[in-house]
Image 1 (tube, helix red, strand yellow):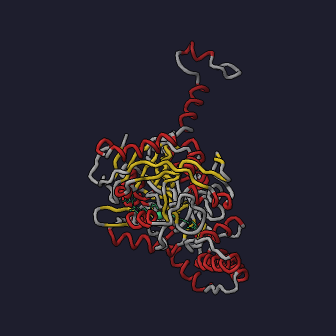
Image 2 (cartoon, helix red, strand yellow):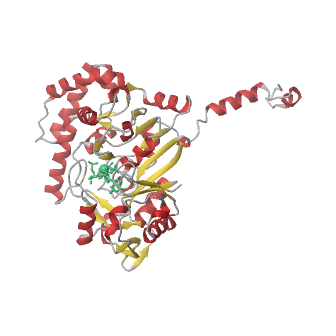
Image 3 (tube, protein in one colour):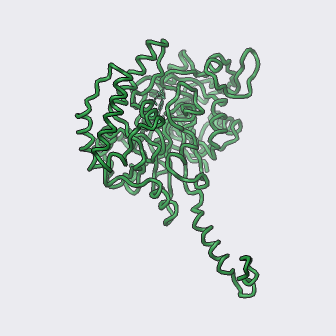
Length: 460
Ligand code: GDP
Ligand code: IMO
Ligand code: MG
């Protein structure tokens, strides 16, 4: 080998010189490839992410959650059984899958165990041995949930409207995290006395901020102690766990986004958003993985638009159309039981979500809900003061007053439930799908035509 490390001797020896071989081996090890597939909500949530993840999990080794908490509600229908998941990744239904809850998730321990036990009664197998939780995940306490409720009351009293949160403590726990006073799973498992002291400080802070809060400090600590030993075997250093998953024998890794692009704390319709990054950046920060490991990014798009809670909704239909979408689509929140607001598909919003996430393909769900409409509209542009605006406005006052420009497509007026291929669909349904693809410049890979697992057409 030459002094400057160039490989001039390599050619004469008939192979790469040792330095070059080492560099090549290091490069190979450093490149686990883009084997992480991501599924993200592209609208205001409830697009059918659970169903898409369940489908992809049939062929996955790991399914991860990277953000949010049990504000999410993901439904999976298998035969006559309907599972709902809030903190557990939906892909856990596949008994061969390892489920991982990453550091970006906020975990309410009683909620997690209740959810797992409820689904175990429905047939979820061996979950305790297949669930791994990052030691860096923050814990949602009961007082965070209670504080969420008090904050909502205060918003109502002080500003005349609340945010319509799920009251699962999401805003308060991410606030504790950002204020650097939150407590994590690693704190619970390392030194319970120290944990208890810090818990008391945090609980007292909340009681002084919200005098109507009555926290049973000893009672909650007692419950947490009970969860501690049950939790211990499931907890790992999430960074090393993901690193090994990426660098060991090839594994197919799936990430299940919770909430959705327009609920993202940075890019959503702020302040009517959740408190985490539900767009693609949240995958890396919420799992501790580099961006080059992310491959496919699938956007889940409902064939129309829904929203739970308060906030601007340009294509909302507060009329018979909205009511028909709501009743045909059974649009009721999985987590809160609230009716979802409904309206036409909005391509301005979807284009914006695509700009942030870089979707490689879309899953278009609930196309069957549109079976009975003779005319179907799609929002394609926004006007403000009579002029088209070439962007999705950040300011909610502006978003509230946009005038939506629609295109109108003829409906297909027939059931598509028996279609098994794209070709089987009525021409007008195919045109609807093609219009969306053409406008967004993203291919549709799946089309949902009913609730069950098998009612999904794959296009390529
Ligand atoms: P997620 O939060 O994105 O997982 O979605 P939710 O589970 O909150 O809401 C989606 C609802 O639509 C659930 O009740 C699903 O069972 C249902 N669903 C999903 N895909 C389809 C579809 O293609 N057709 C019909 N009719 N229902 C669907
Ligand atoms: P999935 O994963 C629909 C909404 C709430 C509220 C706002 C803030 O099922 O799609 P939060 O409790 O997070 O502070 O509430 O965000 N929201 C959702 N809406 N689907 C969800 O999740 C949601 N998660 C939060 O309704 O308007
Ligand atoms: Mg949901």
